[in-house]
Structure formats: structure tokens, C-alpha cells
Length: 318
Length: 272
Image (cartoon, rainbow over all chains, first blue to last red; front, side, top):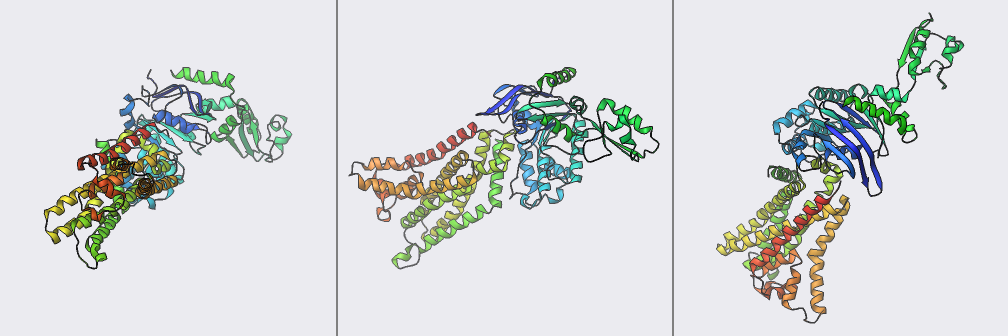
């Protein structure tokens, strides 16, 4: 069994009186993409800083590639880590190429690398222009190019798709998938990212410095036990008159939507299909946003069941 | 070492792009050529006066301008990068804090040094062609060397300011206060001390107090060799005190090294 690329054990981080992180444990394996969700001040950035070795944990242990990231020995591993901070504005006076060349050189690469990366993120046409002329999206691409320097083994991206248009977002996820197949691990940090589901292997939800939930999306869905949204069309009054169906009718104004628990899904679908008049059925499992809201709405920490769940998933991995 | 050079190179490039280098050089050149050429206008003639008068007027100009420019050039080096988020990013790179600070120091120091060399060197050149004396080169070499040290000293002081505050605007305010203190208030206070306390404070004591101000050390370095008729104020008294040129240069060097080491110390302690 390989050792995980990152492992955090009961990590706490305190700033004076503020508990930025409270006894958080996690592991990340090679080639895994982890989504880290939570609102502002939930501790996402603190966790990233700990993993980057910019700050040290108040208690608990942090290990990245087998060593403590804030130690001297971890120095040379820094070239293998890419980071995109949440709010960064690069040196306005310099051109995009000059900025990226500067960062590439600090990691031991040259101008050629910088040019290739600018091409990869699609701003090579503007590389001779000063950064102050760049749009928000172009700056974000420049930041991403910076994080991709040297094909990092570990990428930490804080709000990577902010300011990107849909096409750039798609390109970005393609790059993430590509890096993943090359064996890089990625941590994506965000409030909620639309369309991120199919690109992450696991999700973690943080709130107030505490880990609310962690696991694959399927596991989270199972734990949350959120209903599946089923919307048949063409049935008119039949749903209301059928007692098995009508008990699942959503309470809201939408009269034709059924909110069905996961385990009843197939039975209900069969029931619906038995009507000849049915024209179409839309089935929507709970999406990431709903999961996220579900976990945040829960009273704080539901340790009993949740913890054993995450322990199981951890046991499976090791 | 490579890392330091990379940072220094970027800072220098930034200085070129901001037109800092060009504008400082221009200011220095115009003012120093003006002083050199029109220095005698007060006595009713145009043309070059004696070497010592020229050096004395250039020193009084430099002692105000160089600290101001060095502070303005560097006050936002760290607080600015902190605000834009690049400081955090740089610290995740394989780049140590002292490498970052020294790199910035070399890059911005090079800008100040080059501007001083070009600006005041032009005066030296003008004087050299007019007077044709090798004395000019020697005097100006000392002048330019000490002026560069003065600039570097205030660059290091600017880093101290930049690292101690959390907002750019505060750093700007502190930079101006610092300039006001060292360039103006300090000498006034010394004069008040001289007048207020009856000669208890000997020449030696006064000179030692002046070691607390890099701008005064710079003045001492450049004025001690001149006729005292060109020199006024508290400095005239201190000049007669026995303090060798090399001691003065060493104190000026200390004024570069001490703030710089302090700045490295603060940066290492700083959490983001």
C-alpha cells in the first residue's frame, strides 16, 4: 500500500482566540482530486496554508510527501507543489511573460516553460502586454499557469474558476483531469462549484474549522439521505389520485414533482412507468449544492454516525 | 544565490518599468547640474565655483532627496505584495524569506545606486572638464559612494516600515514621518539641545549623537574635508571633532546592515 501524499492527524490551528481549524484529519492519495467546500472563514485557506507549510499547526501532525511541510527538509518538495491563492494580483507593471518567467525561475525552470504554460492556458497572444491591461479572466489564467509550473505533484487551487468564462472553466477542468491522469493530486477549494462533481473523487465539507463530512459523493449522498427529485410529465391528475405516489409529492408550489427517498426510487419509477400516458420522466439525484446545504444546515457536529462513517471510508483506503 | 538574483532582477525590471530609474536619474542630474553650474549665482556670477562649495551644496541637496526617494521607492515592497497576495504565494515557493528580502534589497539598491551614479556623476564630469583636476574625481568618488550608502540605508529602513504595518497607506505615512524626522527634525532637536544645555554637551558628545542619524553621518563624511566657511549649523561644530573618515563610513555601513538584519528578523517572525 502506498503512503498517502498528504495526511493530517487531528490538526488544530488557533489564532489567538480564533479556532481556525479544530481537530481535522484527512488523507489524500496520489492521483486523487479532493473538493474542499465551506463558506468564508470555514478554514479552507488555513488548511491550505498548513499543507503548504506557510504556517505551522498549533497541535496535531501534518505530513506532505512524507515530511512536515514547514520543516527544512521539505524545502525541495516545494518545487513540486503548485498553489493558486484566492486573491492574487500579479505585478501590474510587468508583462504576463515576465511575471510567469519570474515564478518559473524561482522554481528552477526557464522562460521556455513560461511560454509553453501561457500557451496552455490560452493567453499567449497577450504575453507581451502588461498585466494591468488584463481582464479578470486573463489574470486568473495567469495565476493558473503559475500553479502549473513544473507539472506539480500536488496542486492546491483556491477558487480556481472565479472569473473564468464557461469555455475557460471547461478547459481548466480538462487540465485538472489531465494532471490527474499524470498522477498529480489536486485539492480544489471553493464555496460551491457548479459542474465540479464529475471532476472530484472525494469531497470534504468544512464549517467553522470543523470537518462536517467527508467521502465520495455517493457516500455523502447516502449519509445525507436526500430525496431524489422525480418529475414525470403527461400524467395530469393521476399522480394525485394514486396514494403511493401522492405521498411523495413535493410540498412546494410545483405540483408535479415527487421527492423520493433513494431506496424507494426504483419502485416509484416502475409505478410511474405503468401509466401509459407518461411522456417523460426526469430523475435528478441530489446535487453537490444540495448536499452542501444539507450538511451545513445540520446542528454541529453530528459525530456519532458521521464519524464512524468516515472511519470506515478511511479503513477501506489503508 | 540564484534565487536572490532572480528576485533582484525582477525588482530592477519593475523599477525600470515604473520609470523610477529614469525619473530619479533625471531629477538628480538636473538638480546637480543646476547646482554645479549656477551655484555661484548668489554671488553675482554664472559658472562653476570652487569644488568645495559645489560638494557642499550637492550634499545638502542629497541629504534631503536621497532618503525621500529611497523611502518612496521601497516603502510598499512588502506591505504591497502582502496586499496583492503575491507575498503568500512567494513564500510557498522554494525561496527563503531572507533570500526574498536580500533579492529585493539588491534590486532596488541597484536602482538607487545607478541613479545616484548617473545623476551626480554628470556633475563630476562637468566639473572635471571645467577644472581639469584629479581632485574632482577623488571628491566625487567619496561623495557618490557615501550617497549610495545613504540611499541603501534608507531602503533598509523602508523595509522595516513596510514589514511593520499592515496597510500600504500606513506605510506611506510612516515613511514620510521617518523622512521628516531624519532629514529635518533631528537637526533642529540637536540645535535646540546645543542652545538649551550650556556647553555640557561637548563636541564629542554632539558627534556621537549625530551617529544616530545616517543623514548626518553622510553630511559629516562629505563636509569634514571642506572649508568650514561653506558649512553652517550644528554640523559645523561636529566637523571639528575627531572622527576619521573611515570611522564615519563604517557607521554609515552599520546603518545599512543593522536595519537590514532587523528587517530579515521581522520577516522571519511574520505570520501570514
